[in-house]
Image (cartoon, helix red, strand yellow):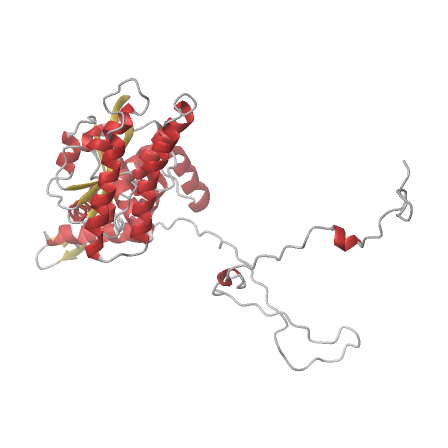
Length: 418
């Protein structure tokens, strides 16, 4: 192939600078200010100084002092062996009365009942079983290898029962506080007792209260009984068992959006009218969320609420009578719960989803997969009570071990006062 006269021959490479041929350099995105800080150092529990006494070159004695650098080493201390305290009750003879006298030994602030395991050990066992979801055998192994505490499987189980019994007053206080909360999230999950299927009903509040109850039934009477006296707003999914609870209601948009996504994936290729309808339903949620995010004045909230309800009602009237249409069930759901979808628009601080309850029941779902459930009614009750206590302390950012030990001491004190 010939090139034109006066032009550069084809076999000659173009004289282009290497950098000009590269794509434009992208400016590195700056990190957030809080990410530019150095690693936060812990408060030292011990300080060791390292210094030279003489010069390594001429062996002359060094003078002066300043810190050249620091290095932090974090490690676990050597665990002390288990503490065993022997209480000796001494009896003494009275020559005048001609009788032996012994002091009254009260160890209620140190140990549960007539047992031998103290409050701190009982708190540790309950925490390992509930929060870390360790099987009884694993709890036994951990206590033996870390603390040198030899304890039987049966004693571990009985300790959990005893802690749950001592925490009954605290469990009732948590339940009473939940009924007074303005917003309560509720959900249920399966649980097995002695091989029979049942359900765990969980109540959660944004303030950090958690309550769990085991029932064999999933009927609508269960949430009605649990929430008897509750006057706030209930946040749930679309399960029909929650339809008859008193008071205001917010249905979970996360569940509805998930069903809309599945509907789009499975039926949109055969029904070209579905994508636009699904987009319109999703847009009502986005509009409501955007409205709430800008913290509007109270006077505007009812206006937007009515507008969004009208839009959802119009969308729900598309195919509720057409039983053969894939969106038939969702249309009926929109009409049935049109007002309950936008209660979060009216109430500041109300969540539009039930994610709080979903996260609250997750630990019990994992525990069920590990252990298969409980073996008796007593075991189920203990599991629910301990989960109520430890989940509440964790949600409130409190140390579960410290709180459990304090609860055991206070329960012993209150029993003495009674």
